Image 1 (tube, rainbow, N blue to C red):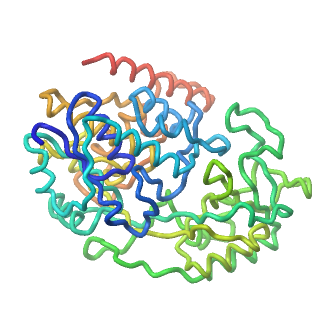
Image 2: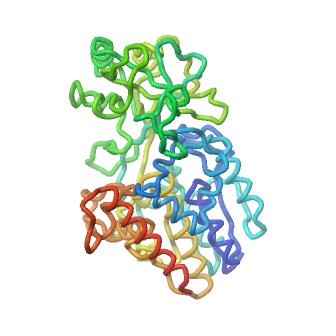
Image 3: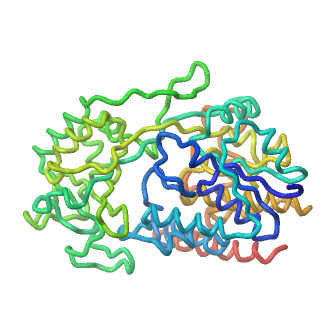
Length: 459
């Protein structure tokens, strides 16, 4: 293939990149190492696999995550289209049946006549540029990039930041003791309308604990045995770091007796119907699939050994007989020094035909990765077609995230640059902001969507 786009990696970012380029008439070769090779975090052969949580974060437009989703809808995101067809109840969040989500994205990619898929492992950048001919390359191999390619990327980029990422366990729904759990969304809000819903219709299954139960659980958690971390790829002289946005529950628990009670186990907005009072602490379980047979332990990312997960999490009364479909795991995650290396169009500054996308750029989160892939794929196609790079306005959430990774606070130095998810702090402030936070967020969202519409009208 000549004068086309080669995309390495069929995660969310890679699939978005491939379809973004193909939609504007540029032929695409998408290279994915599965099913021939998987990493320990992969469980299926499909594209766009959600390896950690099945939640795509908040849905409401007045939230940063909701604004990003609405922008992606207007930009033609395949991930947003797929998510809308396989959502599962999750309060104010958009959560999906991960198998159906992956299948939907995979089907869209395979059906496009301009996309050719190759199943093999990429071992060097040279083979990608050779396959692209006079075209462009998008590297979207993600935080779990295979060792050979990761080593070459480090040489090309002058080093990379590394940290560990963690996933939460999944349990069988029918193994939860329903006599010691209750269904309710926080503050009783329905996931679709946002209005108060009957407690029995809540989107979460809540596992309450009294003070004594919580303190026994906390003491066991901080003393529990963790699994050894193998095959970690880190710069010389630096110890492994854990990203705050995916903090293992046992690490957070060691910060203080109440750290997790004010974090993932916070009981606010919930009332135990058995006692009529707010519990001391609560673990929430969220549907993992449309049928509701699998439940995710929300916020319980962990690196405990499998045996310790059974023992310690079994101290939560509702989980005393829980059957684990999947244990929590911890895996390597790597990202680039993007402020030094990338433009706001996700193009590699030192090699104009090379683009990067996904979590390896420093965007944090599923839909954030999708947004980077969409822009990288579009800009790779524009380069092939002889057009200028498309940079979205910084007052849009998609554009602000791209600006952050290319103009971050530590441009020129690695140690201060950390992954960033969608948040209103990355947007420029309003000229005359409302005092009320919700009104301010609504105004920021409306300004972003108006700005995006104007940008989309430009050639």
